[in-house]
Length: 65
Image (cartoon, rainbow, N blue to C red; front, side, top):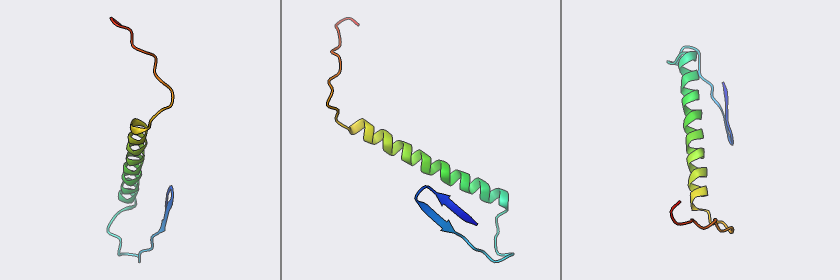
């Protein structure tokens, strides 16, 4: 069963009768792994954006607003 996750590709082979997971369970596992990888990538982008210095100054805050 070929599995492709962005930069990682893996081909997994098992002998008939040796796999203890159903296709439905495998699908759920793959979906969970993909979700976790997307979460990590999003958090990484957020952390990078939060610590990136910008060259443009923000508009000054006005008192009372």
